[in-house]
Image 1 (cartoon, rainbow, N blue to C red):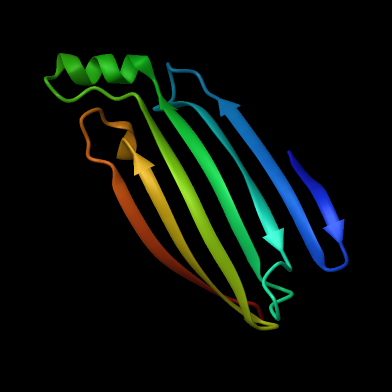
Image 2: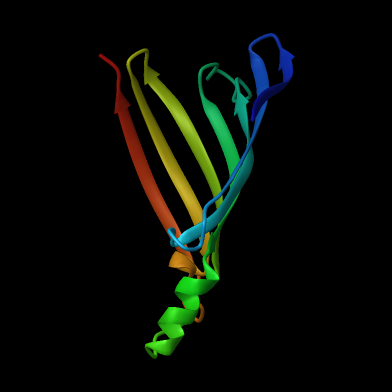
Length: 126
């Protein structure tokens, strides 16, 4: 679900919410949810830039986790990520998007250290 929540001139706030389920018989991931907000036009002098914040949760199937434990491997449960990103319009055809994420239980493995992930995406439109 995507929805525009606010609009004032060139400034907009959009919200999103997604979710899904899969059978634990066939899938490692049995549930997924994410939600967040996109803020466009709020940075002075940067009307096309977008600041976004979101959170996601991915659940690992109990059957998979139990099978891992039977093999003497760590159990799995869920992964949660909190994300902040900034999409900068460098030209009408080029954007740069730095990104920071904080992951709780990376990969869903229990007893895994949380992680801070930094990224940078570049997009060219032809």
